[in-house]
Image 1 (tube, rainbow, N blue to C red):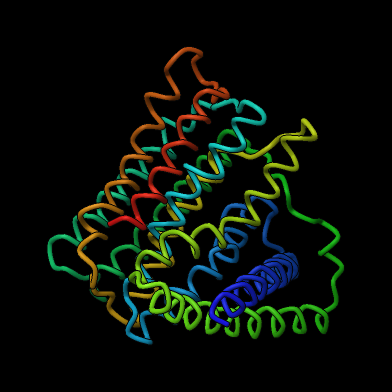
Image 2 (cartoon, rainbow, N blue to C red):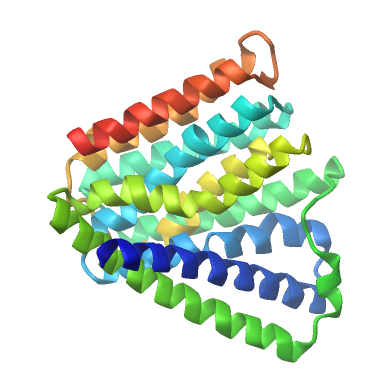
Length: 314
């Protein structure tokens, strides 16, 4: 039954997230927000909603390890699983903006999370506020850079410009209800499954929940890679990791401080997250430069399999 709850919860999060993104984009067009700003801000926040609801629900229910494991595990899965498998199928080109702006910002946010958690054993409301202010500053700089170098944002459905107000409201309601229901089922199912197989909630959250929330992005990337289309942007993955830390944990901590309940979060998981973030730079500059080749993808994927195995052994 626990596994069924988890599967239904993940399915509801995917459906709810999709409806919320569409509603958010449609609303943004009604307020005459530019396509570039929609792509860089509105879509980024909306696609982080499933992780936010799961982390918030877990924190309010007293399962802080699920809140932290959800985000840390998702960040590891984005780079180890999604980037690794996609690069194995079709090598990716790395743009210079990656190491000049996106990667340094991700490292700063990742190190800040480690510092906040290790210094006090929790993420306080003040620290959550710091993350929210930081993400607003990041978005301001991101939009300014995008305007200066005239970035073309892809993946925004312009047919949503003519969506009626009634349909947008229905999408918002469906998205909100599905996200709430999905987060309830996922957290309850994860707690039950952890007790049933004798592992901690933290193990379930950094593995099963993290992989589950990464499946939609992985599926889209794999399909695009197999079709020899543009598979995914490394910048999008790094942006997702930044949003997971700053907006998901920032908003959650503002509402309910997040406490470290399992020491493995600080002695193992967060170091894997930092390691994956750091290793992108040497991999980017190893021959061939600015290409994420198949063997680089294999390194990431094999190390991710090792991480999953070690999570269950610890």
